[in-house]
Image 1 (cartoon, rainbow, N blue to C red):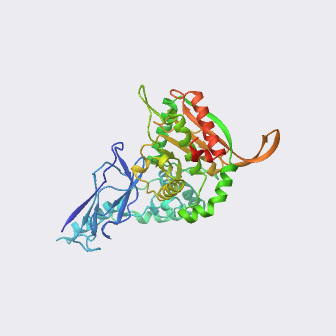
Image 2: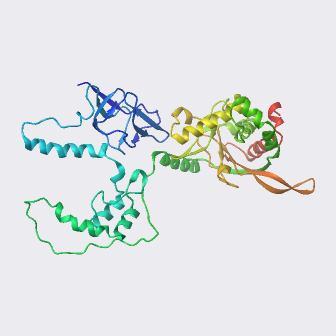
Image 3: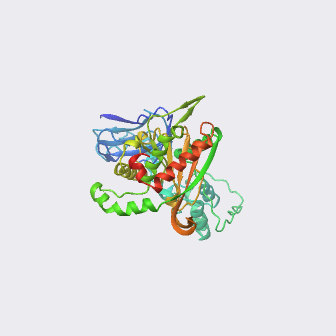
Length: 426
C-alpha cells in the first residue's frame, strides 16, 4: 500500500482560510493523476485541487463545506489499490465486529462521498421532522438537488406526510421495549402559500465584497460627478472598421476598449485620479492598471488590465474576453484580481441609465459607464437625436478636488466624442 496525501493548495498571503465545495469523487472510486477532486473557495477565487497521483480514494478527511487552511490534509489516495476493493471492509474473525464496522464505515463515508440530492436545507429538515417525513422521501429542486422548504410544503400538501407516518412504526428495532405514549397530533406547518423563504450562507466572495464595500463607504469621502457623451463618433468608427478589425485580430472591437483608452488618456492628464491613499501619504502610480468589473455566477469580480496604456485596442478586447470566460467558468486566478489603480464598471450591459459606483479600495476613483440610448439633445440651437451615454465618476474627495474630478471626466468625454485625440494624445 502506497498512500499519497491530498492537501489544500497554498493560499495567497491575504487569504487566511478557505471553504471546501463539493467533492467530485467518492471513497472507493478510482481517480487519475491530475483529475480534479474538489474545489476550494477563497474570498477572491476558486482553486481546483487535483489528484497528485493515480489510484483509489481511500479516505476523505474534510467534508463538503468545511473551513480549511493552506496545506491542511483533505484526503488520502492509495496508489496501489484497485477500485472497489478499497471501499470494501477488511475481513474480520468474528461476524459481530464486521457487522458493527459496516454501519460505521458507511456513516463516515456518507458526508464526504454521498450525493447532495438527499440533503435538506435546515428549515426543510425541521419541517420534515415535524411532519414525520423520512429522509430521501421528498425530491429536491434546490441547487445540487437540495431539498428546500418549498419542496417539503409541496410534499405535505400532496399527502406525503400520511405515508411517512404509516411507515414509521416499521423503523423501530425489533426486541426493543417501547413505551406506549398518548397519540398527539403533530403541529401543522405554517401555510406560507406563495411566500416561500430559503436561508443560505454568503459565499466567501460575497462576504468579502460586502466587507470591502462597507470599508470603502466608511473610509473614503466619496463624491460623484456626472457628464454625458455623444457616442456617435465611436459608433461610426466601430462600424467602419469592425469587419477589417475582426479579420485582422480575430476579435470584435467593442465599446469597452474605447472607454479604457479614454480613461487612461484622462489619468495621464490628471495623475491624482490614478493615485491611492496610504495613511497620510498619497501614492502616485507611474503605471495604469485598469480594473474591469465583471459579473460572474459567484458574484462581482474585478480582474486587472495591467499596463493598459501599453495595450492596443485588440489587446484590450482579447483580454476582456479572456476575463469574461474565466469569470464564467470560475477560473480567475489571484494574479488576475490583485492590484489595480483605477476601475471601470459597465452597468450599461444590463441596461442601467445612471448609477453612482463605489470606489474599489485602495483606489481613489472609478468610472461608471451606462446604456447608450437615442436622446433628444440641443446642437447649435437645434434639437437633434443622438446616441447618448451618461458617465459617472466617483472619487475620494480626501485627495481629489472637484476640479480634477470634473476635468478628468471631461477629458474622457472629449476623447470619446473625438477618438482621433487618442491617436495624437491631445
